[in-house]
Image (cartoon, rainbow, N blue to C red; front, top):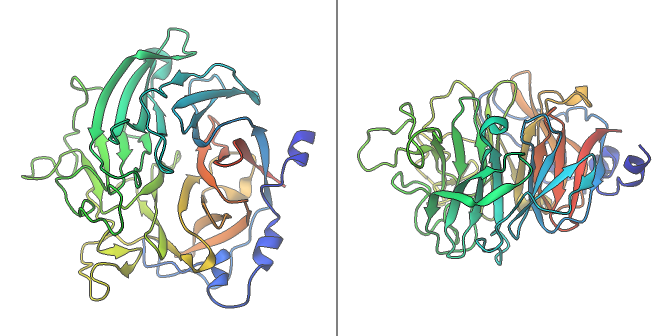
Length: 405
């Protein structure tokens, strides 16, 4: 407890965050930002939602450019933190293990700011089969998804067990996506960026025959590498990759499934003006077009006016770079026990601006409340086995847990 109280400098109280500003409409975005027509209603409430009192407690430090944190759902209580250079570190009871769970630095290109070891997902039956999946940018720049198997004790991954499922060529270093997660249906979902550059020059987002700018959905329990689920939305269509689940994404960083409802939340990084949060209800059959590069958020991008947005699934939430933001960092719907007032709310932040936000549906409208201000440079969120939320600080090399204040 003493450690928690001493190490909360990353998050300032909510009162400080909500008091900042110059009084114009743009600065109000720190508390409640414009929301577009979406699943739950018409627009954002003009009244900020009350914010639960929370703070961040440092759990561990000494990490090098952490990019993600997750758990194995194996009852071990371990947290697995990815380091950009290509290592997976293990933290248990607040202690960082000296030996990595996996070291693939020899395979990973991490020179670009958005390159490196980016994603990790454990098989739902990891305890029994030892299988897990990682995403990274390879030495040749390819966006790579590979399967591994852990040793019998499940204490370390076996590098020799590597089997590449996807190696998607990419000639630029940015917009690599990299999130990978099992859905409640047992299938593996893999998010890819549009291939980088400004404005999607290769038009990957809207190209259904390209694997970039997508969320892919595959069955890793079928076939020599993977199988394609028969109910994927584009199965059987000529000139379309059957792995595609959703398209029109620029750089989904990150997506997550609500562990209670199965709903899918996607944070998609914008170009120069708008960041967005997309929502897909659990009963959705896939095939949604989130609009890039025709639209950025809800705004025409190409062409700048009069863009053909028919059939585009608009975000449930967007915010402007006018408030200091530059890149949305998607989180999770809170389903832990430590902060009951946050139950059912989706948390996210911005890599530059650092306002920690909680988004919820209220009286048919999407409303966001600022929980406080981080120092920025939050590269990712993650959950432990109980649903408590964690954040990793890209620049300070620390793992933090969200706790009540």
